[in-house]
Image 1 (tube, rainbow, N blue to C red):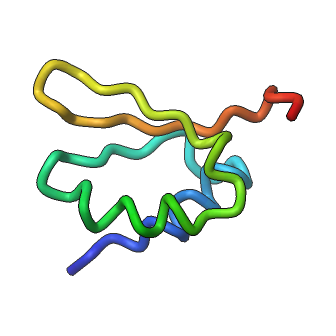
Image 2 (cartoon, rainbow, N blue to C red; image 1 turned 180 degrees about the vertical axis):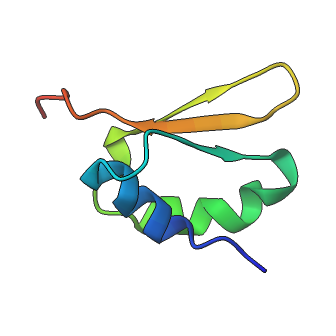
Length: 63
């Protein structure tokens, strides 16, 4: 079952989630949802050595 990345990003924005993880094999499913997300500039990802991305929402960003 595919993850609903748009919903997960909405949950980040709304404070329902603190973060979520995207594994390298999931990235191509995640990317289109990310590119279509209105507030994507506030969805911040951090990669670890294995290419696993952890995303959080920057609620403090001013623009």
